Amino acid sequence: MNWRIIGQMTGVLIAALGCSMALPLVWSLICADGSSRAFALSMALCGVVGGLLFFPLRKPLGEGFSQKEGMAIVGLGWMAVGLFGAFPFFFSGFFWGFTDAVFESVSGFTTTGASVLEDIESLPQGLLLWRSQIQWIGGMGIILFSIAILPFLGVGGMQLYKAEVPSPVPDKLKPRIQETAKILWKVYLFFSLLLFFLLLAGGMGGFDSLCHTFTTMPTGGFSTKNLSIAHFDSLYIEVVIMAFMVLAGINFTLHFQFLRRGGFSYFNDAECRFFLVLLLAIMVGVFWILWGATYESPGESLRYGAFQVISIVTTTGFATADYVLWAPAAQLILLFAMFTGACAGSTSGGMKTVRLMICGKYGYKELFFLVHPRAVREVKLGGRVVPGGVIHGVLGFMALYLGVYVAGSLLLAAQGTDAVTALTAAASALGNVGPGFGGVGPAENYAGIPQAGKWVLSWLMLMGRLEIYTLIIFLVPEFWRN
Image (tube, rainbow, N blue to C red; front, top):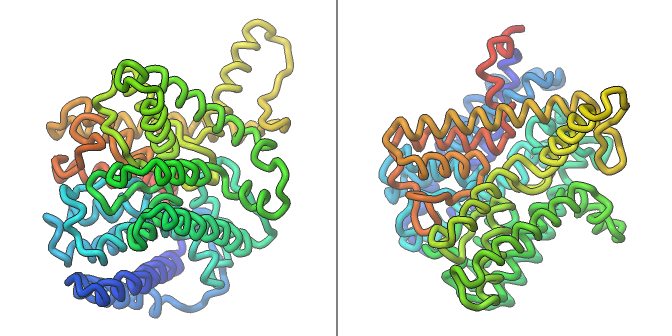
């Protein structure tokens, strides 16, 4: 294990994180909201620690690194930014302690959107902007951002990309991984700017439009308002945000192909078609249950049901209604939707629909063999045969995902958390959704979770964001052996 380059790259990420605090620092100085001192101290701390890790280890730079070191850089890098991103919250004095600050930071960077804040609107604008900004950075991925911006990370960049991008088979749009990263970030920036101006056109203020842009495109879910999107009570704003949540839940390589060539890029992709059909089916099911049982008018049932379904399936976590008060059948559908996620290569969390497709096709193949044991049948996706190694990887991921979920739920329950809260908080954290049920529903927050439970949930959020393997591999003894 090349600890020199691992420490060097971690130092770069910490220092870059400190530089990214310049925007909320300037904003807090302009607003004179009292949070500038917290950002100044945090920037200084990131600069010192990043420099101490980088400069003593900076040479030589050309040797590259293996996939094992790439996974270590990604895992340790995400833990480091989650830790150091908490200091503005901690120094501000608006959080009860360092544990709460780390929880909020990790929730932001992993685009989970779970919060310990009971009164979000009491925060200074500088902290609200930082809360939103870290979700925007984490949405496309800190490591992917580094590959795009820092040229010397191009050496060995594919190892970082494979560990970072949430997909069974990462897509390379260009021969050089650095060019791929830049293309994905340009698409991400384009949609972010478009969303910002559409929200402005709907009457949302400039600051709120910026913050909600920063949290919608990464499917993050942090809001500047206690009531989330329900605060604005605007059908236009809800429709715009729904549209961009769906766009953020689609593989960004398809967005690039559509913007470059047009045509039917989305509908030619099997996973995208499956995602859109699944989303529509869940929306119809929830609408049918809500109409008459919860809302009298079909318009209200469609408006609130569709928004909440899209928000949870794409793991965004925005809310326009307290779905804990809905009919039990609708609640169960939303609970199951927390596990699905959207497309691979998107900014959403969850298992991803491509894995559900592969598991479903593999299960049907096994049933087919029971009837025709001598038949030859392959699992295909989009007309192409899925390699056996990919299938085994998907099955292994699903088993680990469920195992981690069960372990996380038990650890929360062991600390006195009630069963509903423990089960849904673990599902929400691992799926990077945000709100759950029980004590962590959309009208509640995570402040009541025990301190040790917040560390468990922070770990689950990181594991969900990095697709389990990148962090759980640290527990395998062979990983640390040369």
